[in-house]
Picture 1 (cartoon, rainbow, N blue to C red):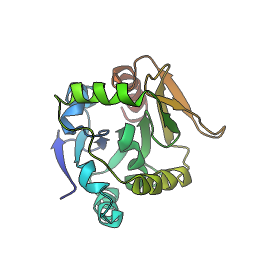
Picture 2: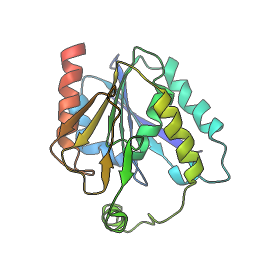
Picture 3: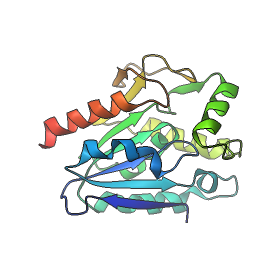
Picture 4: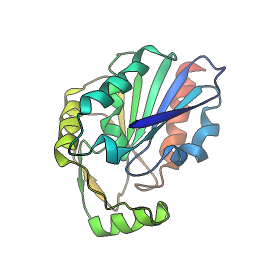
Length: 199
């Protein structure tokens, strides 16, 4: 299996989906779950090394992700970093709001060595050097660029130590205080926006 999911607050009607970034896990979102107490929370645990392996067919993963389009009364998808290239697969219904934090699609990596060091530290020295297929990532990035919606919002830190972002004029984005790994302020802002819409 290329990913699994965990569901919290199962009795709530409206649902959100959370997608973590590179080589992390569903546990990345644990500090933020209390901000979404009024929603059913579906947290995806993505195995990117399997999903983006050069011998892998992305169609299997896309089919599995698309099942969420018709389930659970989803109102929003919140994705971080590498996870942002998967959010539109779930969210191609026009009524779902997408919040992409530190998106890969309009970014260029800088300070690669420093990024890998910090990523290893955050992953407790798990192997973050494993290779994924750049061709599959490019395919997903192109899919993301083709997906345009008035309910698609990008969040980037005022200064990202590891990526620079270059958005086309038509793309909506917002800045937040934090960095590529410290996304707390963006999550608080997204939580408040959802409250203003649905509560």
